[in-house]
Length: 288
Image 1 (cartoon, rainbow, N blue to C red):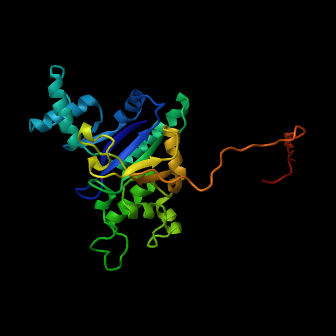
Image 2: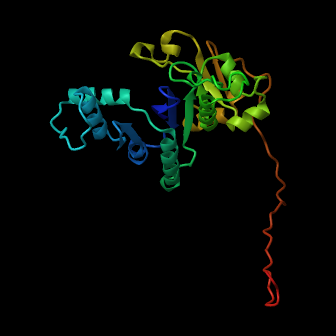
Image 3: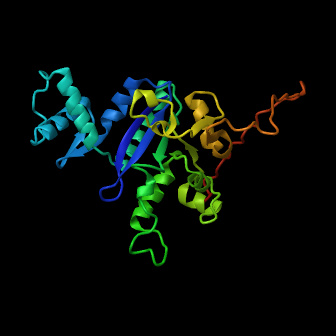
């Protein structure tokens, strides 16, 4: 599977960490050419397509404390300088969630022509930690007395509504995302957030030595998924988030009952007939 990790605008100076996971059957070049480079980033009042050369120019302007100039020549830059400017740009830019949704919709329409399912990607959003939904409070100063949803809370609601799953290792978040929190019962949860969300956790590694070690090596909150290690397998946790995803040091115990196989016995005499639809004839005297 392929994953893209972005920062999107939240409320004021807050940015939210969003991941889009793609099927391993899609090539990186298809994702880059037909989706990633169609996105726009904002810098110094300019709306700029998210292409590598443009990002280098953004980094160049920032490092040199100058204005963005699409006409500068970057062909003579060393590989080291390119990486420096790219790193600077990627640290700066955020994306607009509506722009991501619109371009994913356009990307989705292309997939059948490539022999792919339309649902060959999934949204995951951070619910805990830096750049997570936790930074958007449900209620604010204007609504705290009535305990009603505030402006930041509405943004949080909208982002969670569109998410397929969440990054969190907190038991309280998992109960909430499965509709098990009494403060937001399952019926209200589905009305607000569209579907129950699977909760997963990762390494968030900042060094190679911490790869595959949860929480950058500080916890043992491993994610266990009951499915094939493919994107199609991963999608099963979206359909059964309560039963197919588990976070903990050890694998969950096997279910007390399970189905090993199903056998069907079909009568050979059984047949299916296609019913002909009668064509209705209209009289010229009939009124419509």
